Length: 144
Image (tube, rainbow, N blue to C red; front, side):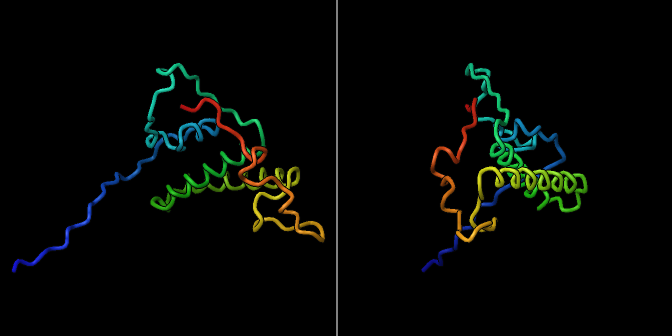
């Protein structure tokens, strides 16, 4: 009887990310990355007659962009932990996001039940818009 061998798992090839141009904040959500070398569009907006433009019009949009940038920079730093320029950029983005988050929460209430304390004798998290409510979200205009 012939012995059956275990099939070998597939091996992924992931090229090592080199230093690349970082997109400005008003382009990162539209492109899905902050790094120019990682941008691989599924469609070209100009060929479809779509003008893609995105400028944050609210604190929530600004915060979303900054949090997105922090995640992207954090992923980069996972594989490039000694890149001091990226560390500086990460610290600036996180600091700016914290300022915007504080400003937003003062105006609109807490974003997360576990991140913000309650300033009254009642837990007010339930009074804020829930993530599935339209008032708690925004749309990115000019998507492909």
